[in-house]
Length: 303
Image 1: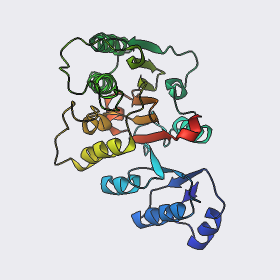
Image 2: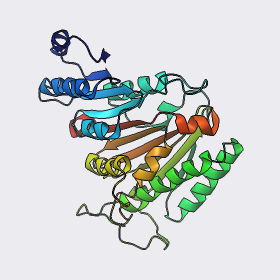
Image 3: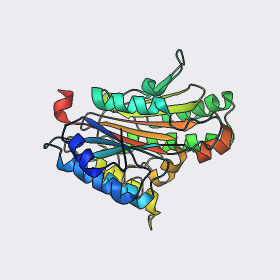
Image 4: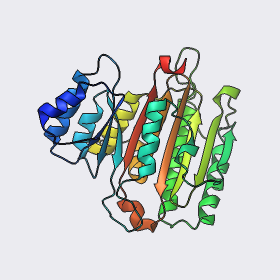
């Protein structure tokens, strides 16, 4: 981990030794962060560099500026001791993120479940209308957990948005065009075998975790960035309609999630994982930091 600031000449000497991952303590002057990332990109040896920021809070415009650099795909939040039930840094999150980056093994909800023996519930959706049943079962699960009343709607909203995206926006036809983006979503729709959507969720006592996975990998970094801009900058904007956009409603979704992870094997598979901190009740949930990770597999990493 390279804290900012360091003596710049000493830091440059350290950066001369190529590494696969740089972890940056980003609670510092924005100019130091910009300078450090510029040094990393300049020493990339034409290969992708993974940079990971650890921060209490990076201002939204700066975060967007940094994320636009191809090497930065990860922000892990510090919680700042907001509640007695939260660690300053979620060590499990940091370890999982680093392992995924180094091992190139990015998929799987189980990586985020910290307690052994926790049951992961799974439903494979073969028809669009099964979304309602999946959300009903999730709602029943959350009430059995006795989740706080203000947390349940946030989790349900995120699950709904992610399922809508996987069912209607992810599938592609032979020409690479969205297959179902223009259909009436109130009508029944049978999905082809390779279009089936996998919905999983669990709770380990700290987090409610859910994932939605499709077999297309059609979500890309540019789409995610467009939605983040709308989320952080308030978008002068309205959400893109679901038939035209990614269907993520990310400007609503992001602020409801403690940890948000996009796992993308382009053209093959997309998995979105969302974690919600539930141990400390509604107040801890609202005050907890927000982490964002975008994991992209290149073609040579999947062959």
